[in-house]
Length: 166
Image 1 (cartoon, rainbow, N blue to C red):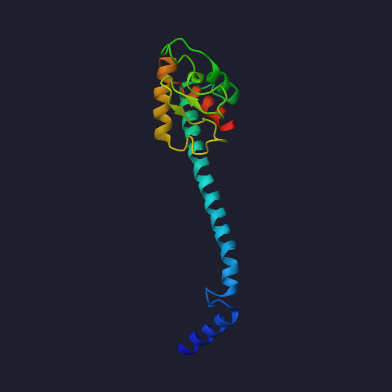
Image 2: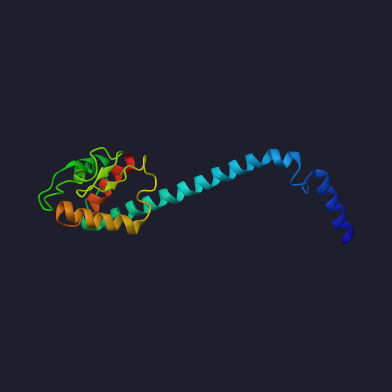
């Protein structure tokens, strides 16, 4: 056993497998290793974020299909129209999504009290729509203020599809 271990150790030393981490070669390769690790972590986080958004849309689609068997999918075009439309059922100060959120989802909005709101578009604000609890909280609050009721799963999915396309 000791003889085999000695032979493996000698082979590993010759191949560089047990080389000095402070060697010139190791130092030269360190930035490459860090870059590869950073790319791998970034790709993994993008996958997790996309999965969270996909799960939201899947949940809305399932609920929309139960409510309406003719449901055929979400539409970013309908979502954009919904975002820009004025409603009469909610608060007078917020008749439309654009009352607080800009007409261009890639720019910041402002509440009636003057508080800044980060852009809605994922292209500008990649962290948006990754926490289902937050998404549900804001849909509930904003739909009640604008529409005077909760948004339907179809409206949520259309609107979210519009924001994901921006």
